[in-house]
Image (cartoon, rainbow, N blue to C red; front, side):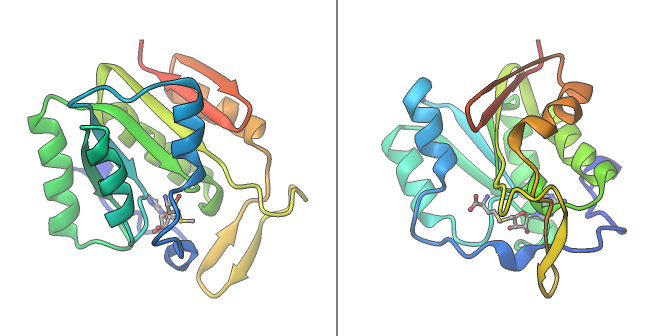
Length: 181
Ligand SMILES: C[S@@+](CC[C@H](N)C(=O)[O-])C[C@H]1O[C@@H](n2cnc3c(N)ncnc32)[C@H](O)[C@@H]1O
């Protein structure tokens, strides 16, 4: 794995156990559908997918998309490397989905690493969609259970961080949309 895709050594909370959703489609998918559409053969890279992804794959298959989940804390290094290589062999991702991930990472430089991963894996005309879960809106980050973290910040407060990596960003309600060009 090249350095960008290495599992961060200094991430204090993996937040792996915040991934509890194995049946219900994450909200980001309905938010994307409300405003945009899926295109046939789109390669969709799910950055921080969580462990239960069968229902997401089924949903995207119905939309004739190719679904590639990635999660440093739920899949092995080999599986994640294969996911990244697969997308690169397709010439990059048309869509990167990053749902409920930046809000569980305490360290700013690791959130930046995730955004740089999204940037690298996207095709030049690709789109990154970000959904932030703002648990209690206190703006005070805290450990919610063993190994799990929530930043408790609103979506708009992530715009500066996303804009540091992506030249084109906008927010529609709870959805951040970022483009490379
Ligand atoms: C709350 S779950 C969200 C899962 C799924 N995306 C969803 O919306 O239901 C947060 C996920 O972020 C993953 N995660 C934590 N740190 C990460 C990192 N540095 N890079 C990518 N994923 C990370 C965790 O392993 C966990 O599966």
